[in-house]
Length: 148
Image (cartoon, rainbow, N blue to C red; front, top):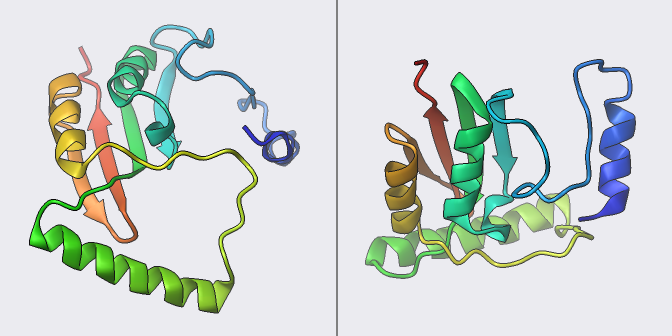
């Protein structure tokens, strides 16, 4: 975790009474069972065991709560994967020319979960979850915990 980012988030949210910024391990931190209306993850679940992360979010959500993930996938299996990976690579180069190179100080790991695995695991752990492929090796997983 990049402490500078934690400090920036904490300062940005200082005036918000219902926001608490913590620097903790998501899988083990004491966050309270069924205590969240929404859990979001922005390009972060590929840094932890995916099944464990989905289990954790399912436990953290209140009935009727929602999980929204912008995740990172890796696929090189089908011809479609190769075409999309090449298109994403070209788009990424264009974006870097326009907005400059990516800058990230936090330690990072490459994704190991394929989109097929994401869909399978999400379906097993969070029934009725939807998973949609997006540009630049991203997917959106959306799931609402049953209300009762």
